[in-house]
Amino acid sequence: MSVGGKGFRTGVNSRGQGYSTVSLPGTGLSYTSYGRTSGTRGAAVTHNSSLPKPPGKFTNWLLSKSSDPKKRGQAKLNQAQVVFSRGDYKGAIPVLREAEQLYPSASRLHFLLGSSLNNLGEYKQAVPYMERYIRVVPQDFPVVSALAAAYYNLEEYDRAIETLQAVPEGIQADNLVMLKILALSFARKGQYSVAVEVLKRAPLRKRNLTPELVEILYLLGEGYEKLGDMAHAKRCFERVYAVDAGFKEVAEKVAKYAH
Image (cartoon, rainbow, N blue to C red; front, top):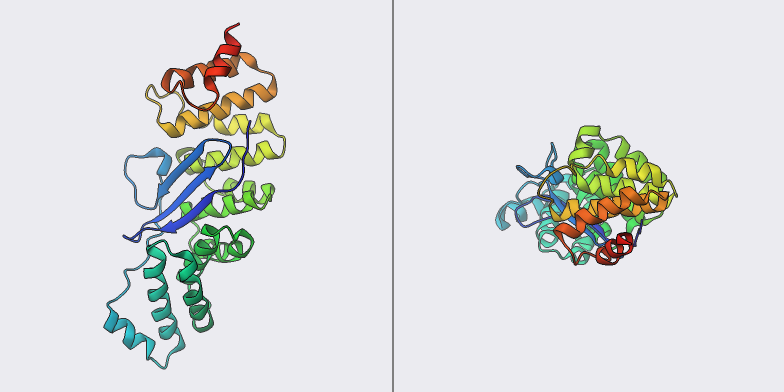
């Protein structure tokens, strides 16, 4: 089972929707889940991480002139959120640091600052903010996924596993991002049999496999290979090949098992 490098991200789009993106170079894995979804098993969440819409410029200017530090902090957070929603994570950080001085307990601060740092690959700095946010909003599952991914990127596989196993099993099974991170964390620890059991919880019996399920099925085949179970590995790779003959090295694997 090939487990690659870094590439997990959480953020918020221009409509205020929280999202988590997972992409692992060397594995072919890439998936985005949003806070608001309907009919997408891999993106199912029960709480969305969308942020309040920032007020107009005049209202925010009034907040910035308040004698209350928290209101001035809210003004900075509003300003930072606009920058952040454009994808300018580096530009958002200085404004968020100012907000932190004024309103350090704000959950929105923890979300935005943790997400900004995480998106820039500053995982060690991002983790404390995401942890604080999740303590307040434990059902924001895209951010839970991102936190587990940050642990993974820091090679703290046990913490990634602990974080995801705290999520109800039904949510895990409906969230392909979580299953992938959990399986890859076990694989990094050399526990391939456990990784296989995690991947088998995905809805792989569907007749029409989505690209995300094709990725999981390929990983499952690699897991079986690691365990020496070539019969099951062959079936996984053949199913992938039937859907996408150009996926990674599946053509070579199918040819190898044909002999």
